[in-house]
View 1 (cartoon, rainbow over the protein chains, first blue to last red):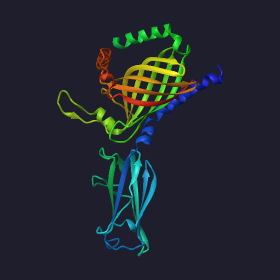
View 2: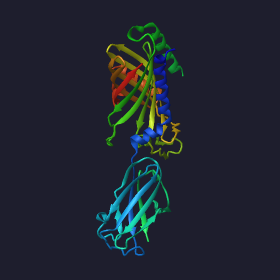
View 3: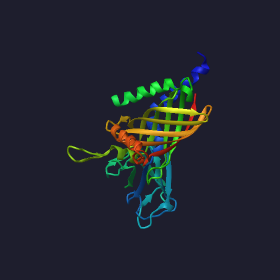
View 4: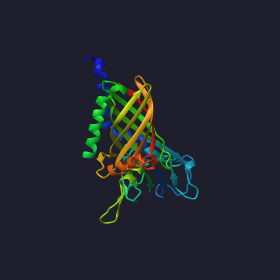
Length: 146
Length: 192
């Protein structure tokens, strides 16, 4: 049998195998809609709440099922919520387990602190988060620097 | 089973007897389809298509990538014994339509009609063991050599009895059970 005649069958077999083996990957690509909102609070032992040094910053790194980094600076500081930083959300995340590494850099002290643990949406102290969380595709995570 | 085997045998005999509208040899097709959003959530549905036709006999497998809220609705039910609502799985999935029917090619026009059972795959490797019904589909389009485009209407029924009832109503002039709520899909296919 010639290669030309075999080619359609090979293509069909490869296509079928691809479909069968990557069902979840296709669904992830089409319907990934998980979101993680991260709020960072900085307390006294690190710095006086409400102290708004223009050079301080908070950055977050998301690891696990989908990597990526996002940063937030003092211009996202919420007036009236001293020491609270609300970062842009991580969106379109595939289902899976995530780690969150948060770094606070204090501009006036010239030093930084890092934490890899946080409070999950159930207010449990943890180092990872599985999405969807309790059936919800949106998770609000709190990180605290003491 | 008898309900499936008898029409299948009839289609097979018909296919052997009337090869005028179809290729004498078998033909495979691969395709992809687009279904406009069926919900307030403005999200179109993509489907993957594999089919084989021999004479006018047509066998197809379509996998519709359904969003999580659809799977949740499809897998939520009221337990007939306890009366309690059993909540479904809030995950996306593939609604698989395994169909058999007839396809006529009057170049370049293509017409097909098919029926078959449904199967629901849920994200994470689960095959839903509840009832997701059966379907009937009508399609028409154009075929240009190795590629083609067509529009299909798919109606999902909860059981073979419901499907039979809808066709019975249609033969008596009431097309509503067959046509109301049918889902349109625009398909692109390649043939070899």
